[in-house]
Image (tube, rainbow, N blue to C red; front, top):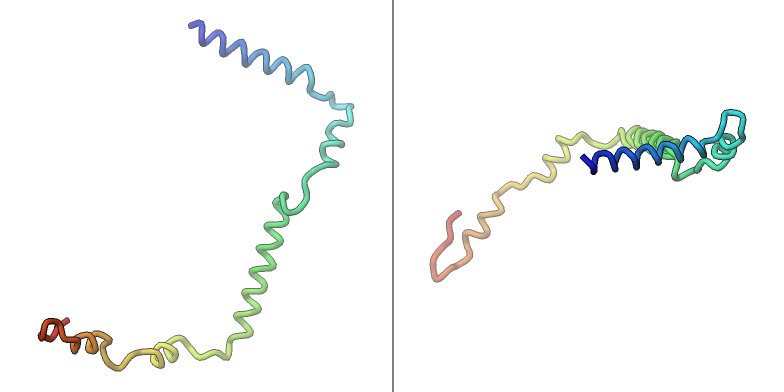
Amino acid sequence: MIATLAALLVVAVFAGIVYRFAPTPDERWGALLERYRPHAPMSDWSVAEYEGVRQYSDLAAAYARQDAPPAAVVAQRVRRTRSPLSDLAKIPCREETVQF
């Protein structure tokens, strides 16, 4: 019970301090705080602008590479004709052939 009252007293004192030192509407504190608003890279607009530029450059790169062969042709060129494990089957292991 005492802890609850102490917590409420701390909250009330803090609220009183904030109310006492808060600027009135006719003071210039708001304008002064607005004057020193953080600029890039701390503001959110720089991230949005960077993201837009990045997306545009990605699209420009995709349009520039339209003459590239389709992925199926590249896959056929890279595809192996035999299993890579067939070479491992010929390795002698205690005079035996390993089978995979």
